Length: 156
Image (tube, rainbow, N blue to C red; front, side, top):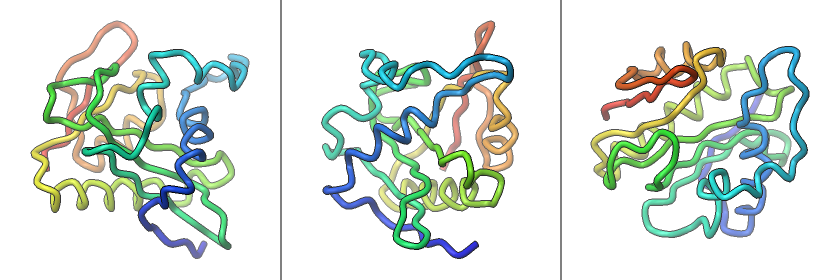
C-alpha cells in the first residue's frame, strides 16, 4: 500500500478525536463504547488544546485520506513517567492495521523525538492488547505494571 508519513497540519488537529477513539482497546467479545467516551477528562488530556510546546503529531496518508496518527505530549496520563517524558499515542483506522503503517509511524515519531532532544517516551497499554508486541519490537520496555496494564518506556 502506498502511503506517506508527514507532520499533521493545524487544520487537521480535530481528526485526533477520531484517532483517540480508535486507540481505545476493545477486547474480543466486548461491545465498543459510544464515541462520547472520549469526552471524559482522563481521555481528553491526550488531545485537548493540541498544538502546544512538546505536542508533536505525525499522520499516515493514502489517497489524500489520513488513515493513522501517532502523537505525543507531556501530560499526566496513565503512562506518565515524569515532566520531561512525552506520552506516546498511536492508532489507525481498523482497515489499515496489520499493513506495517503503525510500525512506520512509530519509527518516524521515535526518530523525531530523538532529533528534538527527548531522552525517552512512555505509554500505558493493556496487557491483553495485541500492540504490546509491536511496542516491544520498536524498543519499548516494561518499567512498571498493575493488574491490567503495562507502563512501557522507549529510551531514545
